[in-house]
Length: 424
Ligand SMILES: NC(=O)c1ccc[n+]([C@@H]2O[C@H](COP(=O)([O-])OP(=O)(O)OC[C@H]3O[C@@H](n4cnc5c(N)ncnc54)[C@H](O)[C@@H]3O)[C@@H](O)[C@H]2O)c1
Image (tube, rainbow, N blue to C red):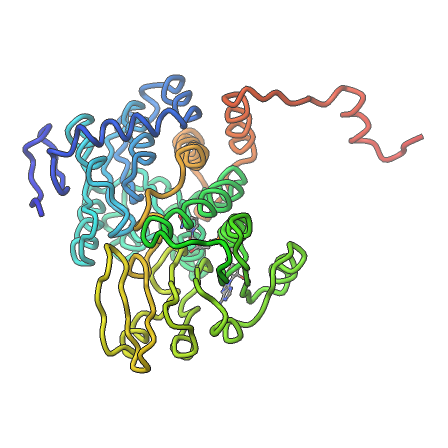
């Protein structure tokens, strides 16, 4: 592992190997082909939009994130980037950002939790003006170290779990700066969580195991935006999909969408593969493991590695071996084997490359335009904010345009009709 140094471009960084920059550059360029909205923003927005602003971003260090931070830098920001997950960093992308773009990056694929936390601290010590987070680890750190948050005028949060955490800070009246909930924009969760997680989670399982999905019984825990996408794609691949839920509405929706719905405990002896996507903890817990079939595969698509109770799984096991990269075999005391992917962390980022660039294009356009909104509005109220509707509409319009799709507009007669109540 390389130690943090300041040799390249005279900037601080801590990445695996600057020698990987060539491969990273190609990967970033490949991703940009499918990021037309980010490309438009990069070309059209003022190069002084974020002048004199220090932006600290805690995001998965992928080729799509690279295209976001390059765009922010082009618009005048001084950008620092750290990983939002110890397993998701693309080391070649990190190298290209440092060497080709002079952006300080702190993240190494497979780093331990101490290194992960040290990097978050490193970012916070830059005393950011703007913060981008994915999972709220950086925002939480800043709230626990308020002197480092003095300059923050606003932050944006990328994912469902991060927003849950930040809203809990807000509920306790402890929010230090306004936060825009990017995940709640329609151009984010309807596409990124549903189609992105829906595809890349299965991609992660394929790449890690090469298992056949057709004919398998797959239990999907949580029928939210991510769960719906995962379940739909699994069904398309020929799996028998079972959903577990705690929300009666979402459970009912799953039933009407044609899935079996049952309690977690009932699924235990039926599933060949289990995928968690709830944002909750201990969804697959101690009691379930012993009831599972021999050879089951467990994967998590939720933000943190808490959905599968790994401590309990370790406790129940007599032998644990890594049988393939990021595939751990747990031999239970009963002799049954359980395979855990990506250490129970985000399987799509640990075992595959995360979401396709095309959906991240919209999510990151939401990030960019939300940051623009923060600096343009000047003084946002101290609370969690929704992404303004105009931003959602702007992103959707740009995306449709890039796809060569035109849609109708309301005629004057239709506008009048829709705003009337007396229809005579
Ligand atoms: N893998 C990725 O790249 C990726 C992308 C987006 C979001 N996420 C993460 O995925 C998780 C889910 O996000 P979402 O947008 O689908 O959230 P969501 O709120 O739309 O859905 C979560 C669902 O899980 C259900 N749930 C909660 N506890 C449960 C339990 N014990 N058993 C069964 N169901 C339970 C909830 O009722 C809800 O319907 C979050 O942690 C989010 O941050 C991951």
